[in-house]
Length: 460
Image (cartoon, rainbow, N blue to C red; front, side, top):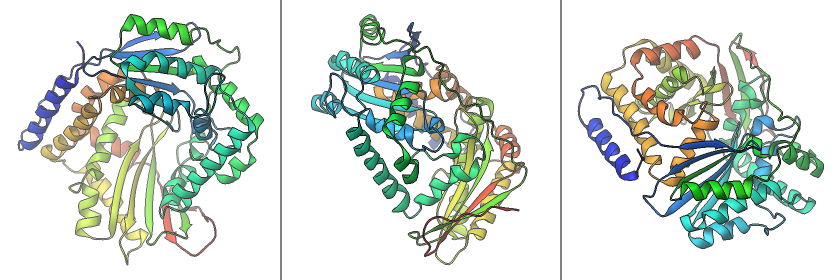
């Protein structure tokens, strides 16, 4: 059964009706599965496709199984840097030609780098699918990495760091979360890297990184939208099938993040933040542990999704100690993080907000959760996922997330059913196991007229 936007819209309408109807527990909905096709080429390239002719567009995405966790030691930011270099010239394409192949025909392209993956994504009218497949294969196999491109893109990435971390009043806070939350796992290296590590990088470093990780057996091609399956298979074989699989094994992260033995507190100072902030983190299991990771997502949404959420009502509305709050259950291939934070209101200190953050999390972990509140949050999460899947690009993203992060492409269908089944007991269980019953890292973020970032660790 094909998953079509019209069917999704009907499902979203049903969800909206359920959300507006008080306070009977929401009935579980049967969600049409995404009928994806999966195959692997002899050179190891994984191919996932979803045929949908609802609109004359097609999404093409290349997901590489390399992220900031794979950055070489002392070379943080390499995966992100290479994301930029992939838009430069190849043997048969000029620099920035991807823009011409997509934007000039009414499409779009972009890329992103995460802890575990780097993905390149385009959407174009479906009659341009063949060209995009050729172009993706071209930059996989024939990328030009020279000194001029390397230096220019390194400067661009360093400027991104200055803008997103140094110039942003709370950029240092969010950039400090991973380095202070992990002790041995390479997730401790921020994706954007550091100016010092990027300065230390050399062209041979970059060439070695490309040779090591940009290979067909370390990539997943995803195509979603308006295409003919037989023609797609023929084009994929034509443009990707000849690319050789290297003999060398793909390096794998083997570091195991140890369980925390005590609570830790750090202080990070900022020259640009007008008001203090505080963030608290706890270690989580892999996103592939869906029995726990999905209830943790529900817990984070109960705490922070919307103005009616528990953290907003407590810290912003009732106690007025914060102007902004948030919580997130960040799923990764390896150990993730549960993070709660507050950016304070004038006249308040981190300790006040931290106390209220803990109180709200403990209350959620131990006290009854009104059925209407739980159903509302699950409906919001489900609706958001279904809305995303109404486009070819959204379908491809959902499939990529499932395949590379959540444990396998089958999760694109099974996880939404699991989300609907989350109960109060599930929320209590995962919070007590991973949050209220575990050790935390607290980061106090203080405005100070000091050069650089200073940190200090103190056991609580």
